[in-house]
Picture 1 (cartoon, rainbow, N blue to C red):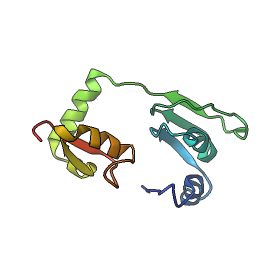
Picture 2 (cartoon, rainbow, N blue to C red):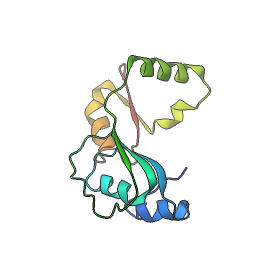
Picture 3 (cartoon, helix red, strand yellow):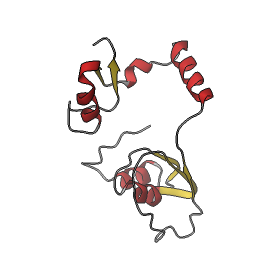
Length: 134
């Protein structure tokens, strides 16, 4: 697993370097930011799968895809069963789920939490939680 600061490094260059030029077999794009779909296509491996889960509106250009034979899937929403499984996973205590959250906010700070995830509030926010009692 690798984290890439896209403000200081090219995501495509890093993916291609880490994979020895192979590219990513599966890309899950939840960014919804301009250019990220094109970048996913650029570093996708031959026969790769790109899952688009983020909101956004980006034209997808096929130029440069060549013979990659890519599969693009859209993921919207989730099932009741997936919520049950997520709750069971969290409740099991087997995974340090609390470490995923980078910032905690009270209910009165919901607007700041949303702004932080969007990059305009508390610095470094990746995933936030909002406690109803705060």
